[in-house]
Length: 125
Image 1 (cartoon, rainbow, N blue to C red):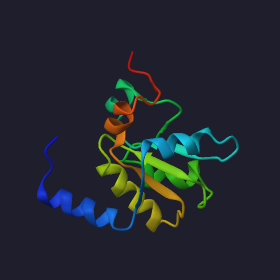
Image 2 (spheres, rainbow, N blue to C red):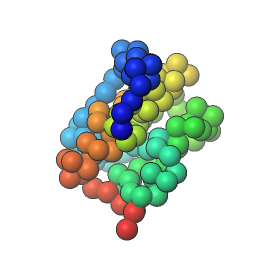
Image 3 (cartoon, helix red, strand yellow):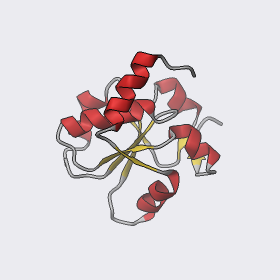
Image 4 (cartoon, rainbow, N blue to C red):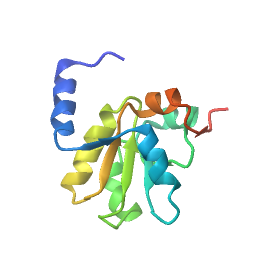
């Protein structure tokens, strides 16, 4: 997808404050029993339905700021957000950081990187 200059500036600004994490490190963190790491898919409903990272929870970009405090009241919970390519997840992670969440990451490369790494998926069959 081709992104506009204004959108890319907005994302780069968010990325200056957001920590990004790769697929391998995400898989490691998710494999630690009892760690409580949560993988949140912030893509649109149709994208989620077409396939997703195994074990991910869906909280679309349009509602995450509205719903996160009810779904994840612990502001220190480790949250790893992903979207299609890492742009929307960076914006969402920045907003969650501004809301007081202290342990939020954006998955570098998003769903595209997840699939390219051969990481486990589900749905979309």
